[in-house]
Image 1 (cartoon, one colour):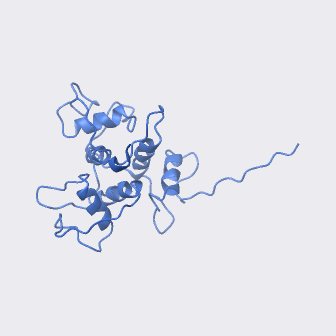
Image 2: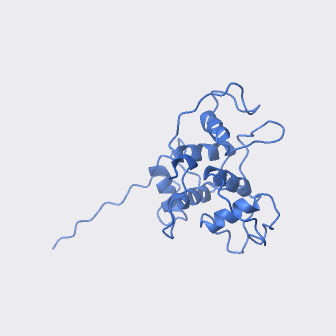
Image 3: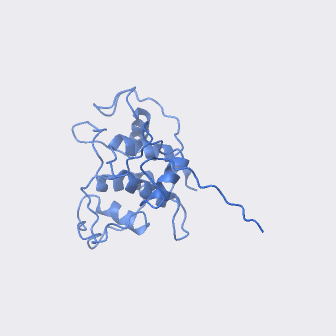
Length: 202
């Protein structure tokens, strides 16, 4: 009996090959249209995710809903026509991003892992979680900024931290790790409901 050999799926990005860490997660991200990669055909998995790009990924995950233009701009450094403008405004209007005390958003600044946790937690509707009574990770004390959000991500299985027991909250979020976080939100491994944007929740 002849066996039908299925052709391998084409490699989507020139720098992300089968067997690479987070290959499946990055492929899923591309299949969903959440990322398109770069014009040169790369994904650049170890590059940092900027704050505007993080807003864009969450915006696309939510289905790229229509955005009502604000009467006044919420951030002094975010103007109509700039890259990811709609996504940033949507994220602001839905309480996902808050910007800095000086009125800026700093769109091209790489997003740190603790701020990324805050974005994701707010995207999910800021689910309630008791304040951590102990360190969440070795480098995330209970009273540190965004400790509750990071604890929620850990509880939901979105993050596992590093093998040494750290989370590295002030390190920038890499693009491959971002793909893994978003994949786990929509594809929980324990059978629990997916973590959707709050307006999509039942």
